[in-house]
Length: 341
Image (cartoon, rainbow, N blue to C red; front, side, top):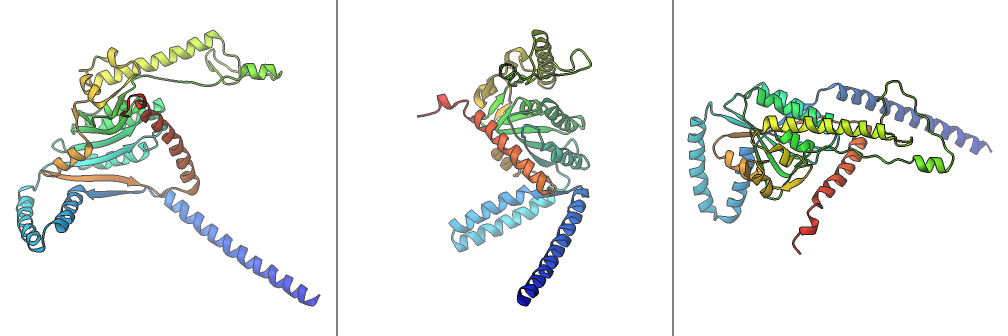
């Protein structure tokens, strides 16, 4: 019994020490987390000219013989030195990436990247945005589009590159560009507004369940999930959608006056080739092709604002990305019935 008592005492002391250590570690992690959250994050900059050069050198080194590679590098090094001297003061290209989800959460990084660019860029430079989004919430994408409009307002040429999809809110952003380039089979358009919700009122009524909604203001609540939706509420809800659609159409028409807005603002989407015919885009070209070509004549810099997220924030982003993947899959399956067999 004395042994068991000593062992229990030892175990209790050990558990106390372990709990104390864990508490200290958790406290330290919380303090560091607060410090990280108080930080505004940081801007990462990559010179894409160096990236393309490294790709070329790696291939040359593998394919050419040792002597041929050395001779080629000697000529290229001499040409690069001469080129650097003649390029002083020339224009630059700043590349930003926007991968949109339903809430356009990438806007938090985009706004900081644009702020950074506007501190240095001049009208002789260019901003290229590689945009990928199937759209989402109206107010979220309206804000993201307003961020891009800052570039236009500063008089800096803005080029939008769409390799996969820029639809609905994504196209609202794309139309801000002075030029829109897209891949031949990218999806563009969907200039429309949609809202949907289930209604379980009849199910609740069947089981004698009442759902009461109390409002102040005639149109504070128009349609609900649980209550009975009357015709007056539905008409008001549809009116609000139509009003938003008109604003969307006017916004697109302002930035792309060459469009026949009534023809393209039907909610339809078009692949790149057809979108070019509708003047939704200006040129069929991938972002890789365009940037590699620009890197031959000017300095090209890729900007990315990064900020460490807390664990709950990372979990929330993972859930949001999961929903976004479902939406993207839906867009990609739009043309499934006409795919090659």
